[in-house]
Length: 232
Image (tube, rainbow, N blue to C red; front, side):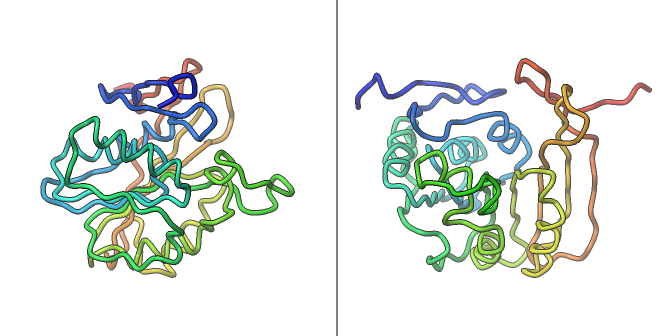
């Protein structure tokens, strides 16, 4: 490993450290918020779509899953995820390199995803680079992401996802189109901005309609975050 191209960092709010490449998508507050939001039970099978460096798989491991699987279309990201899993001594895991939209994965209890946020055309023409692939729907459009997640889940399996708040209407529509019922929806506000910046979603395959909206997450200027607690 060429150490000058890599940094060794931790996921906020955890003691989990991992390698990151300086020229690729890196963990951020979205990663940390999703890691705290998702729920994994002992013995469950977990799939991470767009795993990148494997950060969410490392977070899922603390709950003692029986199997971890990460998918990414970028070979360099897959190699990095494999290294991070190996350094943490995780052997009950598999990293698949390829286009998730072309895969037929099934039998998972939990799917987690920090997907590309921006639809094609949002920033004009986009060149495929490691970072742009992670940020723009070049290979993973929202509709195909959610249809693939639904196929991968067992009945009553759970999807955990973070996305931009302005895409919420699209997310609700595509979840319903794929029998994914949103059970928990939590908005994230940056204290420096007027409107919500992102949303955390828990959806269950085949569940009855019933959605909870807990108090929002507040993102501070220093990058730390906390859940809003009203004065009592």
